[in-house]
Amino acid sequence: MTQALPDRWLRVVQVVVLLAAFGCAVGLRVVVGGAGVTQSYPAGLVFAGCLLSVAAAARTRVAVSGRALAVGLGGAVVVCAPVALGQLLTLRPLHDTRGLAAWLAVVTVVATAEEVFLRGTLYDATARLAGEPVAIALGAVCFALLHVPLYGWHVLPLDLAVGVVLGGLRQATGTAAAPAVTHVLADVAGWFLR
Image 1 (cartoon, rainbow, N blue to C red):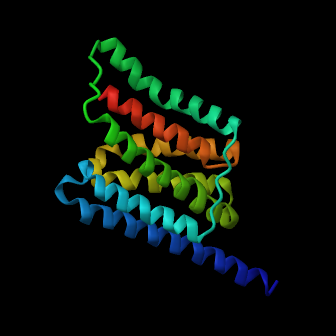
Image 2 (image 1 turned 90 degrees about the vertical axis):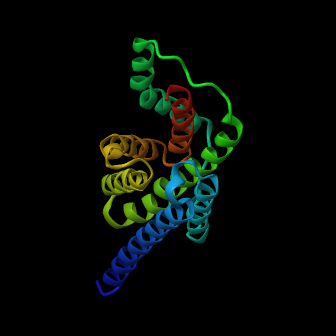
């Protein structure tokens, strides 16, 4: 009994420290990006570097398997289908590819870093402390909140829902690889469907 209490407190402290580090990374992204934070490649890369540094310090492991990649692809279809259907029904043209290569490189790094941290490091620590449903919920809330300084409060409901889907993919596969694939592919689809 005496050992259980300190272990639980260490888990609480770990989650709190991870949340503080995440908040600092988001804040640093906003400071580096300034008024143009949504278009700032340096701000995105600094943010990704912070998240990956924390994940590395926590020794986060991301297992990559064919199953995880397939589930991630399926997740992208689920997440993107409503927007793609709307695009199709309104007959809006797709966005062109000018600037896609540089954007894709940065977005792949940033989206993957977000998933390694949120559905890897933070998920693992939170699941050990309070179970997987809480890990899914906390990751979804963090995912939604990180987009508010970039796009405004109106994105909160959609990003919260997407965060739950990404957390469900992590739970289903046991790895952050599946949500990382979904996230990157959804961002790519978002480029063309905007």
